[in-house]
Amino acid sequence: MNDFEGLTALVTGGASGIGRATAELLAERGATVAVLDLDPTGVGEPLLAHRADVGDDASVRKAVAAAVAELGGLDVLVNNAGIGARGTVEDNDDAEWHRVLDVNVVGMVRTARAALPHLRASAHAAIVNTCSIAATAGLPQRALYSATKGAVHSLTLAMAADHVREGIRVNCVNPGTADTPWVGRLLDAADDPAAERAALEARQPSGRLVTAAEVAGAIAYLASPLSGATTGTALAVDGGMQGLRLRPA
Ligand code: NAD
Image (cartoon, rainbow, N blue to C red; front, side):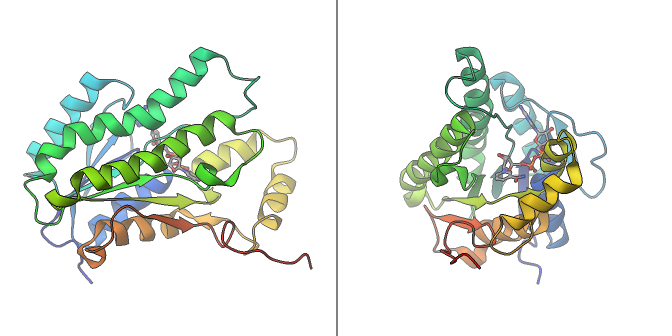
């Protein structure tokens, strides 16, 4: 199943968690893959690594150009880098809103802007944005983070419309709570990390967290020629969190 044989991919936030699992899966399936990350320490063969901050346009342009030169073209962009934020609208000031929106939303715009001229030259061009169930779920204590992911969802639809006639597909994945270093850090900060993890798992319809590999699988599907007729969609990877209406046991 070498779905990506002969194809090239760039994964932002590819040094950890969902991005790392995605970069590794695409490489396993035959793609030549470059990772763009704030901290690419530890990313090695067969992955190519580029240090860049998606919050900085010059840094993104330089890293995308270098990665594309190394890859010899670009077929797939996985816009995955993102950061979290907790709280209600009363808890984060303007500076924090600008900072998180800049990384989570404008970061994806910057990377897409740098990548699009190269994607146009591909016969299998695809962009996959990592969104979240937070885009549409109404999660408590996540006003800023949810707003960024709502914007990523809308951006995905608008980009899909703008580029469909160019043969560039644009989709997003909506992970539920995925067991990545990010979630690990949140659990470690709790008074009782083991109890917090158990409570989090109990809140999932499936009784467990989503794995990074499962999100990577969905991203790989949307990035591959297997989904050639799919654009402007959001694929939930959440163990049933959004779609199921389970009766209390
Ligand atoms: P993670 O923290 O494990 O990995 C994120 C990676 O992004 C890190 O390698 C980090 O260095 C990189 N990064 C952060 N800011 C960056 C920047 N400014 N420029 C370049 N790279 C940067 O996180 P994860 O859980 O794998 O999350 C990845 C994506 O998945 C994010 O967009 C997040 O919003 C989304 N997501 C995660 C979950 C979850 O439960 N883990 C759920 C829904 C959506």
